[in-house]
Length: 431
Ligand code: NSS
Image (cartoon, rainbow, N blue to C red; front, side, top):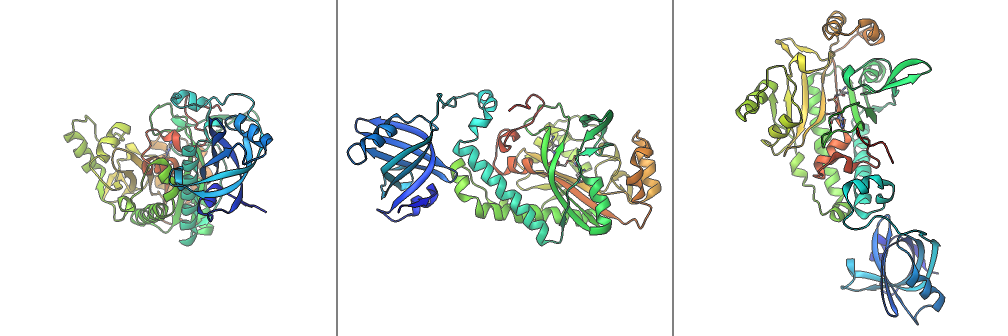
């Protein structure tokens, strides 16, 4: 009996072996008594030739009439052939349609970006989107592996929240049995609670931002890789981020080869090899001013500023010590210069900009109350969060990394939405 193989394994199978493949018809060309099919599965695409006379006539007719994207089972002989894409093809001995495509497949070469996004549920089958999703899954696995190997416990946090973590302007409001609650922007505060039992925790789950900014790097729903550590300083946090990014990029470069090839891309692990340069906000401000940006001290950097700044670097780099005004209330003021905070963002080089944001948290009760008030917020909305500073408080630090931002940079995509299965942006919640 023929071995049931995946396409990638069929390329490796010995010449003349009879194999059985399951997949979808990506393309068909008919030349008289010879039909060329492109058969696609989750591992790749292989050419299948169906020749009249070498196969039962009924099967030949079925193959010559098969519609694009029909699902089929093909049995055939493996033939190495340098003329075939990938260097091998299947000479069909039996052909069976499982599910016929009953309408013309709408995705065709030259389709517009909008059309492809409107038909994302169908476009997902393309080898390129499949390759991106494989790389995304590899990276997610590597991040989990890294945290586990380094003593972090995975925790799962709520998505419904009652008060802002990263400022009220980007909260999505949800009706919760007549009460207003919000979708989480970050699990940071829950992680801060969890470190008092678990010390080092991490979470990979979606965050939501009602961000109307239509940039190439913003999603309204993104996957957030967050970690928090008890008894850790800003320096400790940067050391963790540097190792996490450096190690996972290296491992990804080693394992994603076949998928990168489909995309015509390459990841050179040296682009993320630690150590990463560190500059203070004040220095970054000087660089930007020298490039003609007119920014006041205290202003946060937007997409334009980060793009220009990150063109100055060929490796990820930290921008540290942002002014209080530019950061959320929970950031620890620098004891040696209280105008700035013990914060750090990691920016990807080459125009990509921020992929990680984090820093040291305020662990003092009075100081946190004061900063909540200064931010125009109500301490009573943060009662449980303040409680954490009442019982055995400890200096602690953490960070959040945007999974899509990291992939967007590593794959050199134009738009961040390309690395998501079904992107969520201000103008897109369907399909
Ligand atoms: O707002 S952050 O800079 N920081 C936080 O949310 C902290 N509370 C995280 C923490 O310390 N636990 O967001 C962190 C990262 C940021 O660097 C981006 O990589 C990503 O989250 N991020 C986004 N990715 C895609 N789309 C949007 N809108 C977005 N916002 C943040």
